[in-house]
Length: 450
Image (cartoon, rainbow, N blue to C red):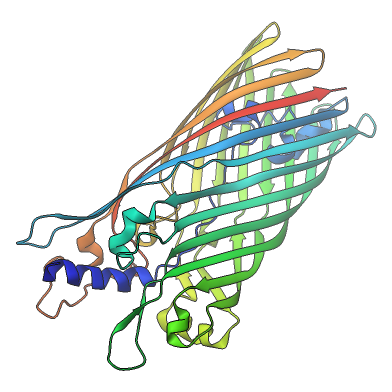
């Protein structure tokens, strides 16, 4: 291995060893097949069993007992390349990777029960957040001390249990509220980097595999309003409060024994799932055709710096020294623009939609275990209804805009002989390279009114 490549790998070890960034907070934000295939523009309509998620005021207009189930499979496809240009050497490709095909199953189930003509109670269980990445360790061996057996993966999920109530203020106005109990989990695995050897001769110790597995609970509420000034027009608004999930679990670094330390430590970390605010409208210009539009805002700026507490004192001291107990994320608030359409003909319904979903994550905190892109999203589907039974099928395709963090932004491409690191402020946790991502989401729903 030539000197240029050796120096590059040493510096990459230093950069990546402090990159234990949490992958979290990527909301699915399209629950229910009918809502999903209408571009997720459903806050102003909210007239099926997914109302408990989109706008709980919609349940107030249900006149019959109502049950529905929605299932989906989130299938992400990611690519990551890292090319290094250090003149006069030719361009060197350190990483050329594609994620392994993984299926992240999620869904929603809800039941509604009219108490009287004005009051409907309901209960829903759904997955508002769930995604991850799984890379082949062979592709990252140049960044993990030539060890192809290490895992590079993340898996994030949030399950919400929501009892709720909807109330008709009048024939045209309804309000609804839910209490949300959130159960969160995530698993993270990557190369742990290297540490100085405390004993002579001076050398670095490869710390091997880092893994953490954590679970936690949080609480919040959703409030919705639905107004129908005329039969062919409805307007809705929904507020979902932030929810701080208090995670507890265990972290492991396989090489800690070489430092005379325990390989495991109990770990605690608080992550705030942000506030969500949405307004929407639904309009029927002609019989059978419904057009919808939503604006949905998420306060991702709540994910600023994620702090981790390592219970083991030795771990706590080491992580504090390296900075791994505080991970800057610096996410920005984001506004989604959504549109949808449905055309009903006899017992059949045909649907399509589009929405734009901007990434909340800046270049300064991009990471292969934190998939975050600007997405243009197209949706389509159809449904069939018969005597209270409704079957819906659909698909969603998220087309991610490519992103890149040039190597020469994070590290000086033409360093002096001592290989001085030129690290602009804020890029300490960035992983240089080119990122691509698309996501395919097939879905099915079954519901019944009785």
